[in-house]
Length: 251
Image (cartoon, rainbow, N blue to C red; front, top):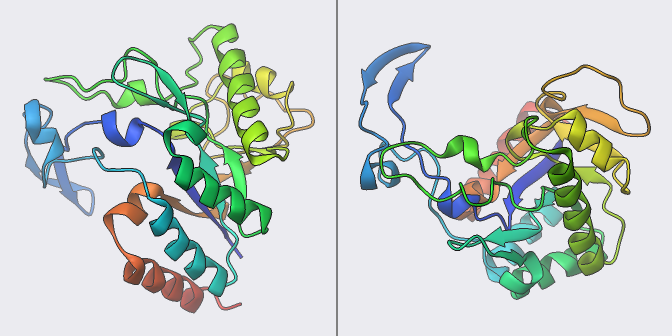
């Protein structure tokens, strides 16, 4: 039985990761190509919008979705980005930026209804995260590229762990790298923390070196959602998704 996971909570990527779809394909065949999809406002409108922008889930919305998960005996992993990076590159801790949402998730964690995971400190490259007028900034919304300094990996891992563990008052033992991008430098930093598992679609980018004391879990073992899915859809959508999953995966 697959476990459910929700990513991007608290990440300003949902607001600043703006890129447009240039290719429209069906069964692997491109039927329409629009090279200007990343120009100006086009990247933010249908049908070109690839990701952003959308708002953070409210505490009230979380309460409704958490009830649905609970009623269906699902304990989701909720991957939280520890700080929101604003337009001036200030890092605002998740509990300060979204106090009501954070309190709702903390209560859910205290009640054993969710498992909190670390989704990085920033989710992005600070200072390069704002939208570009002519280009996609998607690459800048991956936090742990191998060519970044080891000290940056270490600083972001340790600081994100501190923020999340201090607020949620528990050990955070799962790490979910943003965009499935992580490095041996990330792993070396994780060894200094309580992290026991890394969940991603792929292993470290530059090496297949085995990890010690930390387990790698393939992303395919999870029903993967982003808070974007919950924000842009509704309760009926989630209920239907759970029903279809249960129908196709009899318990």
